[in-house]
Image (cartoon, rainbow, N blue to C red; front, side, top):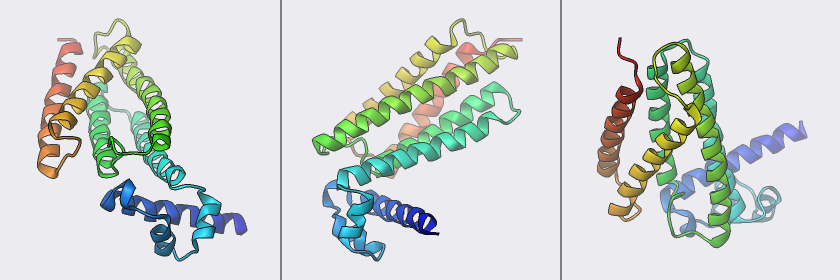
Length: 203
């Protein structure tokens, strides 16, 4: 029972922190405010998360877990690899929007937050390569895709995604409003179709 209550409190804190970070940004949120949102003292909040950085890190980590959970469910479906690829790319765009809302890609973070975020992104990249490689292998096996080296191709595709994302963040000065996001989404979808057309076997 105590363990269940502890888990519920943990999830409540993450939910409240996510809303605060998304609305105000990391620097303007205080632990006092988050504690008040969940109806607990700050000392109790520090029992679960010793610093604001650790709480922010956990929020970003939780979002990544949710993303991969959705992707893994999609991978079990009996659908063509090209449809699987589009679904993965769409979910990836949604996740990117979440990171933008949470200011996870902002340059205005503490050194500790930047360091922990970097480790999370490295781990995220590793999982993405595995997932994309898996999709490409399925396409190769069922005769949809012409890919000689699925792992290398997965790395190159992700580098293209990163480049497009970095370009939009740069020209928008690290802040994407809804209009800019729609523009980026349209550009990314065009890139996805170019990639699919490039690796699809013509019959």
